[in-house]
Each structure stands twice: as structure tokens, then as C-alpha cells.
Image (tube, rainbow, N blue to C red):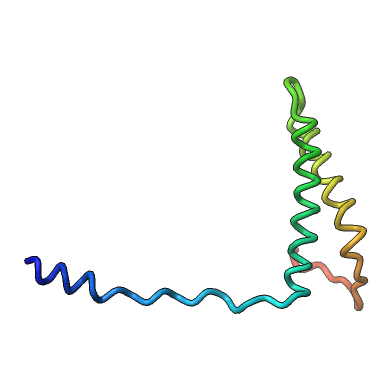
Length: 86
């Protein structure tokens, strides 16, 4: 029995290769997004006191994220927007 256990231990599965290395613009994009979320989270934590309403915290978090992303992600969309649902 010990021979089969030794054989299993020796035939280790090779580690799966991770995603391809990201380029610098991709990393910058994720860094900026992380900074926006970090600032919004800090603001929410400061507002989270005893007696605070959850809906108020959510709306303040939404405002903080929208304000942070409006300054960075403001690419205009070309074409006509059509609703996808009914």
C-alpha cells in the first residue's frame, strides 16, 4: 500500500499557468478603479455610526463611486442606445 501512496505523491499535477501578464495600461486602469473604491469605502466607514440608515450609506457610496468614475471614465458612446429588454 505504501508503494501506491508514493506513486501518487510523485505524480504531482503541474501547476496551471495563470493569466497572461497584463500590459501597463491595463494595470493602470485597475489601479485607478481600486483607488476610487478605496476612497468610497473610507467615506462609508466614516459615515457608519450607530443609528445610521443602510440606505443612506448605500446612496453615499453610490455618489462617491459615481463622482470618482465620472472624472476618469467619461468616454462618449457613439450610436443610438436601444433598450435590450421588454
